[in-house]
Image (cartoon, rainbow, N blue to C red; front, top):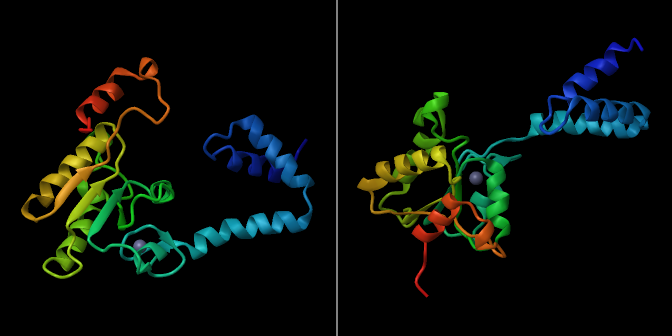
Amino acid sequence: MNCPSLDKLTTELAKLPGIGPKTALRLSYFILRSPNKYVNELSNSLTDVKDKIQLCSKCYCYTEQDICHFCLDPHRSDNTLCIVENPSDISQIDSSGVFRGRYHVLHGVISPMEGIGPDDIKAKELFKRIEAVKDTDLAITEVILALDADLEGDTTALYIAKTLKTYDIKVTRIAHGVPIGGDIDYIDHRTLGRALENRVQL
Ligand SMILES: [Zn+2]
C-alpha cells in the first residue's frame, strides 16, 4: 500500500512510550477507520495540551492559568514544601491525601553521568522561592524531598539539603522501604536496607 500519510502517522505514534511498531500500525488503522468527529477531537486535544498548558509561575507544575490550583488553595499550609521531580508526581502524592502543603517541581534530577547539573533543573527557583518568604508568615519550615530512591534522587536530595543548611528549615525525605502488603522474602536487598535505615519507633 502506498499511503505516505498512514506511514507518517504510524511513525509518529511509534515514538510514544510503550508503543511498538505493531501497536502503532494498529492504532493508525483504528484512527483511519474512526469517524471524522473523533479524529477531529483527538487532533484538537493534541494541540490544546500544547497551546493551553504552561508551567505555574510559583511551583512549576502544569496549569492552564498563571498560578496553579495547588498554589491558590487557601486550605493548604504555606510552610511546608514537597519537592518532586515531575508534575505527574504531584497527582500521585496528592491522591495519598496525607500531604496538605505546597509543591515545587524540579523538572529533572541532578545526574552527573548525563551532564545534568543543578542549573538544569528548577533548583535555583526553589531557593529563590524559599528566600523570598524568609522571615515572613509564609516562611518555609519544612522541605520534604519526594524523590526517587536512586543515585540521581540521592544526589539531588543531598544537594538541596546542603544548600538549605543555612536556613532554619527541617529537610526530610520520604521513606523508601517495604510496600504495604509487601512480603519481606521478595524484597530486594537495597530496598530492605533502606527500610531498615528508615525504621520507625513503635
Ligand atoms: Zn503552582
